[in-house]
Length: 212
Length: 212
Image 1: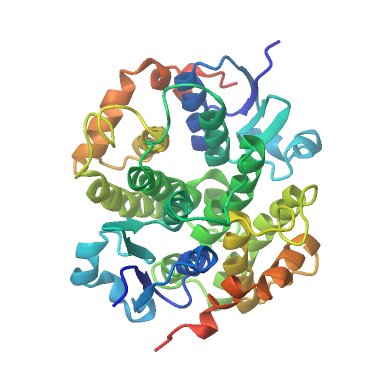
Image 2: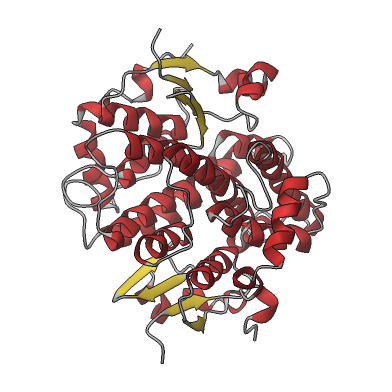
């Protein structure tokens, strides 16, 4: 058994971010599946470990860490290269702004618990739910494309992956699932394509994780 | 005219966070009002400065910074004490996890553009919208209270304010506006009360900003 355990679900965007981060840092880990589709995140056993009942949760160095951005910050502070954010404070803030457009302005509106609320509690149609999904992705991607443009290279900030790409790639995967066209976002598309060819990103893809 | 300009709106939670951060660091700033209620964030003049058309946006040291968490990170990296996050990587991750429960799991679901979509596009009733609001606040506060409990002091992490409190205080203000009871959250309530008495938090309160 390995020392680092990721409580994981293949389709969770937030868990996907942490898988990319662990791979980038070269941290070997054991994946422990929490089946969100089956409601396993609500089991008392899991909630005893993580009261919020979300994935990801990372057991590492004797700590139990939650919230993907907070986990990635820990990995960046305690593991070696490559860094997830640039050193210069303004560059760092720029990368964090791109990451939080995804992590705060897109993803929270579109994750499973929200879509369930829209369809269950609010009894909205599948089409209305899908339009909700696409609306917030488009709004966020519009902003992100403009913010990224001046400094983007093969990735969102220059030619090396940062926290912004770690957040982007799972969001692009989800955009594709919900048929959001991305041809209007050349910088996002390019970063996504570069990431596809990067082993740390490729190995974190949902299709390569245990699903059932 | 001062060198630091905050594009601000009194009721924006994200702008409120940045006001607290600027005050904690003792950075004097000029507030430039963007009237969200009147749709001023959609003006082309403002969108030329900030393509996402959100507040806050901070002009500082020759940079234009967006996204509250990214702005606060910049202030913490470039200005002196007090630090917004602890030095120890695990403590830092804990504080960031608390901050992102608010900044990613509560606030994005309940800000103005979402409430407008619920009432406008989805034609939901005022009651249904308010129940949506309260639902996500309760879910997030439940998790935050449990996460905070082991390490909370007079603030959410020990006895000095951190990024977690900077995010909490605007969220408590909004919870009050939407009549979410907070008696079940003793640690959140205590941190909120301590912050009320702290000059940097008190001076950032919406009631003390230009409103019209």
